[in-house]
Amino acid sequence: MTSSKQFTNALREWSEVFMSRTMREWFRFVKSSGLSLPQFSALMRLYYHGGCGMSEMSAHLDVTAAATSQMVDRLVHAGLIERVEDPSDRRAKQLTISEKGRALVEKGIEARNRWWEYLPAALNAEQRAAVVEALNSLAEAARALEASDTKTPT
Amino acid sequence: MTSSKQFTNALREWSEVFMSRTMREWFRFVKSSGLSLPQFSALMRLYYHGGCGMSEMSAHLDVTAAATSQMVDRLVHAGLIERVEDPSDRRAKQLTISEKGRALVEKGIEARNRWWEYLPAALNAEQRAAVVEALNSLAEAARALEASDTKTPT
DNA sequence: GCTATTAGTTAAGTCGGATTGACTATATCG
DNA sequence: CGATATAGTCAATCCGACTTAACTAATAGC
Image 1 (spheres, rainbow over the protein chains, first blue to last red):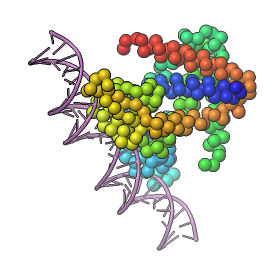
Image 2 (cartoon, each protein chain N blue to C red):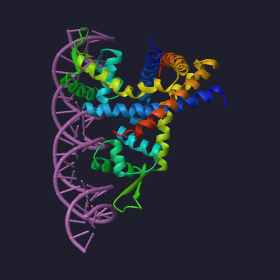
Image 3 (cartoon, rainbow over the protein chains, first blue to last red):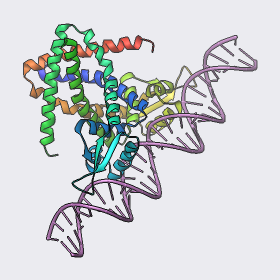
């Protein structure tokens, strides 16, 4: 078996364990928050990438402008998003996440990550160091991949 | 900084990169399939854990029996789930995933994993070996954690 | 054997997600 | 400057997710 194949198998296996648990925790949190998954997608977009316009949000969510407008209405009404006129184009609006929205997202991230915070205790110091190194390599490689994907026209 | 803290930070960082991309690919796939996320949750449950009853499914989805019944109706109608009478209890039904459902789930898993299959090329052989070892440790530790969580009354 | 409980279904209702179409205000282009 | 394009919103509509309530058939318990 090639080293690349072993790699892929190992990542696949970890991915299944990780996804299964993390998604479960995420869906649980979202449900308990009273919001929907698409609403959280909108919030996370603003949280991780900063403010954007309605069209950008619409493109990100891959839905029509009308759908976005209605969803953003609800999030604005809930105090989770702020919508202001774009100073450089009077037709447009700028969306930013409110402090309340930010706090909610952070709480969600915490909730979905909590399960693996007990993992260090199950590994010895040597294993932990190895994992740290490996994950850093992975994260770096994945970010490079993301950057090069972004540059490729689709 | 403690080794445990470094570990947690590394996993957190990888988790963000991984989740961001993987969820995006997953949502894209689900949307293109014409099914909803809750429907996929039901299918994945059957795929990974085998057949179960309606009540079990209802508990897994964390919704009422009526919601489950209606959703399962749609999946049965779409040929993705099979629903038969439970031979040991005439009141109950047994749900299993159909071949069509299985194929769809597998296609989805493939779709959400495709992005990181190019990662090996970005790492040298030494790094790859280290990652394989680390991920195996992680997967094992996570499975042990899952098993002990299951045994803990909630 | 009778009563209580259970497994699942059906109906009715609300909600958010999503679409299309129409519209207004604003920006761009020739 | 007028015509066209654009950014976003509103209305109407459909759909699936989800709830509650009521119901039937089957099982469990005494």
